[in-house]
Amino acid sequence: MTPAESAMIGPRPTPYRMLVIGEALIDIVQQVDGTVREHCGGSPANVAIALGRLGHNVDLITWLGKDAYADIVRDWLTDSGVRIVSGEDAAPCTSLATAVLDHDGSASYTFDLTWDLAPGATISTDTSVIHVGSLAATLEPGSDKVYDLLRGARDATTVFDPNVRPTLVDDPHLVRHRVERFFDAADVVRASDVDLLWLYPYSDPIEVAQRIVRERRPSLVVVTQGPQGATAVTENLKLHTPTAAWTVVDRVGAGDAATGALIDGLSQAGLLGKGRREELANIDEPTLQAILDWCAQLCAYTLSKQGANMPRLSDIEARLQLPTPTHD
Image 1 (cartoon, one colour):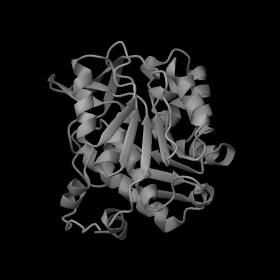
Image 2 (cartoon, rainbow, N blue to C red):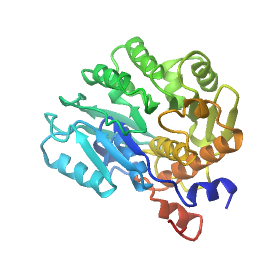
Image 3 (tube, rainbow, N blue to C red):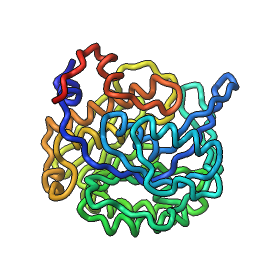
Image 4 (cartoon, rainbow, N blue to C red):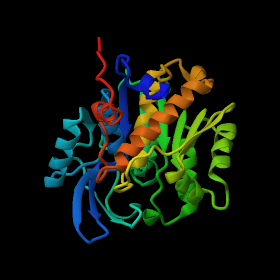
């Protein structure tokens, strides 16, 4: 057990109130052998599940329909302690994402979906952290509404994952503009190297991350790099962690697990919420390295499971063969 793993799995502080904004849907996954499996998913919903399974109080603003798929998604969210606070049945139908797996477990996606906010969507005043990602930031008519909602929630720490979906994009320049305005509304960014390469062709993703920290609002950017691990960038630090050594079944939801672990790690370090922006910007090297290593462990667990299967704390304890800690 490394010191980082010990710190993350040990007794945990009082859970923060967290809000996730974005799509919850059904992933229809076509395996390499042609078999098809259906899983609940959606990048922001996966992050909400990850946080709920780690013991946090999680609300979700989403966009579900009145159909059997929505019932399945609601049960999935509730089972992990996620509370839908807006958009539970406002959509014309529940969105679908079809993922076709390659031999290395990576996925290519097609979508049948819409994204919007239900009337009256609000952010509770006791919310410490808001995560926004994927379609919530780029797909209209909901994108503008989400951005306006964030601008009214300045006390909460905002975490953003662009999670760009090229198959849904008609105008890359417009998508880049929408993503960049969310960069300017965020305190923390978690992005894949693939997304940053799509947004900024011919630029090194780590250099892009450094430029985001230098020129825009976020004080921390974490770039996940697939088999190469992940790199974290602040104004003063650039740290790397390798991929944890777990068997890869597929890569669906791995980045979302990393986002959940990042938020969870920052919460344990006391770096979320009102009045903590200066401390977040000045995060020290041991703390950031521990959080980055934690991201690698949760990401690796999800890689070892079919679909976006986020771990519970007990799953990581069992994997590392640790005794279950006593919580006061």
